[in-house]
Image (cartoon, rainbow, N blue to C red):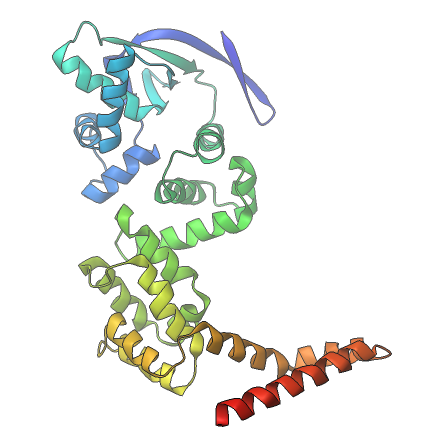
Length: 331
């Protein structure tokens, strides 16, 4: 008999062997849930969950490892809910055992488990499972992590900071997870392989300015992600994001053509490159100009320059170098 501590509460954990057929899959487990979402089944039966889990590459790999080891090295964790024992940690291992039992029911009938008491709350289970997979093992994909945090936000309706403390993630990470996953849910696309596309799209500051001005942009880009027209997630950052960041008249026109469906991302970026504004040097010079013309920057610089001749000295050196560059480029 061992113990676990969650928050301020300590619980006894019973270690024993159970028939694997006595244990139910936990539909809220991210590995289970992500498979179900892609299959479009919101309320699956246990047999449907098992069939879906058995198809995953992760379960097939675990089946081979368990068979080679002659059993589980790490017990699965179950919790008692009413008369049912539910696998809250180790659903993939349970599915692997079910596959092994098909060929040898006697050998693979039982497996080692850690049993949590019925008195443990759902919110404590969230903390327990989240801490294991988000902080310790870190074996969930980012999409699975985000989905898990998102669903808990829906249940708890608490600040981002509260969820972050519960599972050991940073507040900004939790905020990003929830915002991106919510966007996927709102746009009816929770395909795991699309996560990177939407993460780039939702979190890019330049793109967000256009999304705020032109709400129809979301439908256009989501449609292109779903159809596979946008071939790589990095194209959203490296192509669409760069055009959006430039924000001059030509770039604005190119972005409008993308939004209106007159141009795809590849064609838009080719036009952008032709302007000569896609290089790093251009962006660095532009950022420097924006900084130097900022009223706030000038105000603080003037205050710091009082009695400090080095600032004026550096500015004069910058001016001389800029004059030289301009002359060289004009030749």
